[in-house]
Image 1 (tube, rainbow, N blue to C red):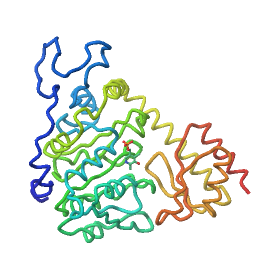
Image 2 (cartoon, rainbow, N blue to C red):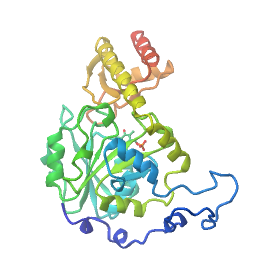
Image 3 (cartoon, rainbow, N blue to C red):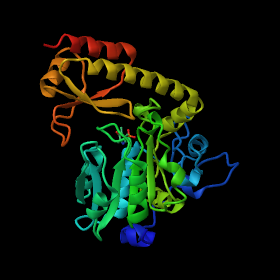
Image 4 (cartoon, protein in one colour):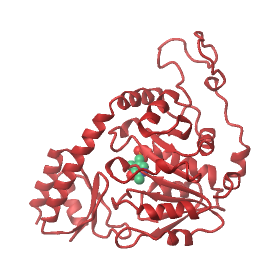
Length: 345
Ligand SMILES: *Cc1c(COP(=O)(O)O)cnc(C)c1O
């Protein structure tokens, strides 16, 4: 990896971040808070939340096996994605490389930040050679985006491929493991001490069943976490979210139970799909959804809409012609989808 100073935008390196009242006072034991122009009434919501979410990071650190200093928390992982662009990519000069097809937010954030986006097509098994990603980079490439398990294809990118990119690329490598809780593949979090250029993304939006509270996580070196903290909004994770997340983290076994249920349903759904006369292929998946190629996906998509069942039509995505992406729901939701499909003519 290049020296971090050479990868970070110079304005960000020089930036002195906004200093909020709750940053300045670090001590314990004060009981009169007249430092932040808050209303003294309407406790506890009258108070600004902890800008660095220390309690929450300790709880997440215990579950994920990470030190709090290696954790960034954001308003969804989407916040971390946008911040990484703003920290590393100088608009209209730098570029990023990503696998294709993948999660749409990387390109949207690139476009918003006026950063060139270089997609590299996966092969027909939705894998890629590390060299193909590296060949797409040049001296202005700051980040390589790898989503694994990948959305919308569902599969994990081969471990050795990601290791090779981490070892051979001199910039930042983001491994987005939003669906990692559904997969047996070991998390790249465990390799953070080996690769100083690695950022791993997790979220509470999928297996943790809490998309509504908007809580995303980035794990990385303390240097990169410090940069994320420097650029984020001072109070980016609100107190209701911090409180609710702490409660959910107190019961990690609930998540294990959900994952087991969803994986059992996924097996059942895939077997049922393979028996549908208009189903051409179901792709292997490591996530809580699967991609399936149908004889006429757009018309089946519309048919389902008319029955009140919404799936994701990926027909216009490269390599996903005539494909629908199906999220695993409850048993009865899945049953409703199958019942509708069995009546399709
Ligand atoms: C759903 C998803 C996320 C989650 O984003 P949040 O902002 O945390 O809800 C991140 N990455 C991928 C690939 C996803 O599919």
